Image 1 (cartoon, rainbow over the protein chains, first blue to last red):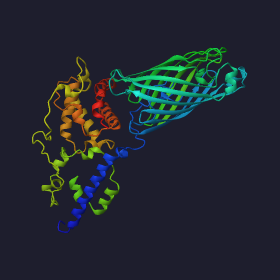
Image 2: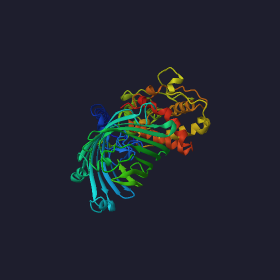
Image 3: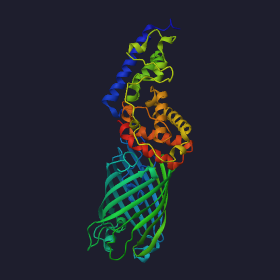
Image 4: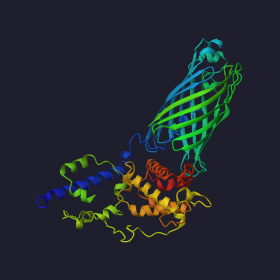
Length: 303
Length: 205
């Protein structure tokens, strides 16, 4: 066999190796991104958070500093979710999509559909009247990492959530000053591994009435106020977290009181790309109907 | 690698050229590697040309006793382990003592070297030494009665080109190895809490 091998094959192999090395070298030096897929899906499971009812990633009710999508710092990630809530007198459905860029910037869109059911008739809107809202949001991670780095440095992000109620005439008729508004959030989130505990604190400047579904501010009180969102989660396994959240809210409208909201949730990463969340949610009084609490189910796909 | 290249047909060569794959920096980490050292072309039946000599590949000979390849001299220090060890805890027990830690480390290394996401980083590395130093580090940090004699985390990961996604894959493999060894989840996380701040020395690109 050895004699039959043409000598030129050796030199060809050599040229090939050299050229291949040169290509590899060029690749690695000139274009460091060439080995990186657009969607790398490399994030640790659950560290992309759960889409909130306002579209931004978080814990379902509270916005967290997490960035949506399963990307790491060299790729982009995408995610989509759908959420349903059954309240005592109302029905809620929301869905949305997000893009995470380099685990640094999150862009999200969500649509909220709030079904007044029989309460709609009592409120003079007509049975089954639906309030709708679009929310466009951007979030930027400023520092830290949810999991890595010092346990004392949380992941910190700033967010802006522009909300547009699609029921301008009605929300103004019930006393809102505006049909659109913008919330500003600052969040700090950390997984305290030594305790298997996820902690989040968010400060929100907002003048939204019922998340914005009933417009923004009131003639007497148009300005934003500082509200707080806190979340605690306990990791039972790498794929299951149970926890609770609390969110304070302004009460701007004269005709109806607005309460703080809270929930108890269990989130299960069914796979790397799918997270199922079930929660007990309580938003208190909504448009004069008290005791609005019930079950939330949310499904999120992320890549 | 060299052995394979010798049997490359022109077709395979063309494929290699059109699809070089951008395997990344780890393919060029060079000579400090067990597999390369083992494939001695002098003993290769087809080896009329010493490719390693042709390309100036410096060969390292494994230590006959330990099987490890020589490394550049460095100062050993417990601080090289990258964290303070647990004290007065039941962590060593939760990991099954030294025997348990050794089994977890061996499984962890096996998972990493066979994980298509990150196996390229371990290719051509001294896996014998990795198993020993990793065991020492885990054993030391878990207060199971070992001294760590390896390099510090920054030097040990220099030139490996590890990304955040690579590190995440590695963490998942460690979680799997610990889970298979039935280390309680809370203890797994307490250990990960020791390792998590080392990311800045491990992730280099």
